[in-house]
Amino acid sequence: MLVALSGYAFSATVAVGTCTGLVHFATIQLAVSSVPAGTTIKVCPGTYPEQVVINKKLTLEGVASATQDAVVILPPAGGVVQNTVSVDPDANPSYLAIAAQLLVQNTAGPVSISNLTVDGTGNGIPGCGLDLQGILFQNASGTVNHVAVRNQIPGGTLLGCQTGVAIYVQTAAGLTSVVTVENSSVHNYNKNGITGNDTGTTLNVTGNYVQGAGALPDGLDAQNGIQLAFGAVGTIKGNTVIDNSYVGPTYGAADILLYDVAEDSVYVESNIVGNSQYPIGLETDTPGTLGDGVSVTSNKIFGTSTWDAIDVCTSYNKVTGNTIFNSAESGVHLDASCGAGNNNAVSTNTILESACAGILVDAGTSGNTTGTETYHTVPFPASSTGSCPFVAGPTLAKAKTTSKFSPAR
Image (cartoon, rainbow, N blue to C red):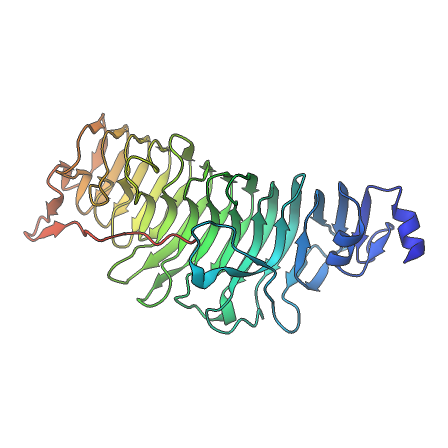
């Protein structure tokens, strides 16, 4: 080891494994702990059963060797253990303890993670006592690119624990985190795919593929594919998100959920979403304080299983240029059920085959405007009654619940 240290002291790049001529380490964590800030760590193909904590500026990059090109981080043989606690000031007290497979925490510079897989198979978590997370940024910034995160399911069995997130960014009060997640694959999560919470968090999610578990029965989690919430800001652009659905009576699942985001600072653009309960949901539990001013533009939405394609229960949003196919209720719902849904601008959307209205404007809202929309085979292109009669006669009334959505926290 002394020989190795003398060799890498003058180099900005080291390796884990022996596929390169670089100074090499046996484990990722040993490399991270040994090198100075600013080092690039190249990880050779193979499986690495370990939990990794990064607390300095680094580049962690999986590399190809010969015919192999898969770097997989798995839980240790005995399962994962707690390595941090939630810094969210209003986190659920039952889920403060976190076991992150790859934890980026309190870094002075950005951390770049690329070309590897984080797999939660064999995590060994019994029940709901520990929150399993694939990649967690806490009070830290960086980039996740060309990464696969999968099987973030405590104990390997889907539960109603509100735990199990593939990629999570959270920020303590007064601090900042700026993270980009791009060109990555996320699937088989218990609660959420990609999540950014808290004031101080900026999460930009671009070009990813996120897939939920499909229609989950009551008693399991209402999943969300991509979530920004509780004061976070960011852009959600060019992603494909599908199969987030729930059949319980109170909550709904969303492909893209914006819940109490910072005002005028979130953009949802050019995503493909569908085969889900709520493809895009905007909601607040503090009307007039958080959640307003979102831009939802040029998205393609198909196949809602239960509710509206775009549910807007905040105010002062722009919903423009979206294409919506086969909504189980309305194409766009300007929703009064959370005390908002006012002063929204809806225009130039194309809506094909919705069972209810093309645009449903609740009677309890005000100040909303609609532009020139394009409708095809929509029974009621516009409605301001809060419900729609089916062609066959019965009325489709809108569900009014305390909270339609179930954000991860």
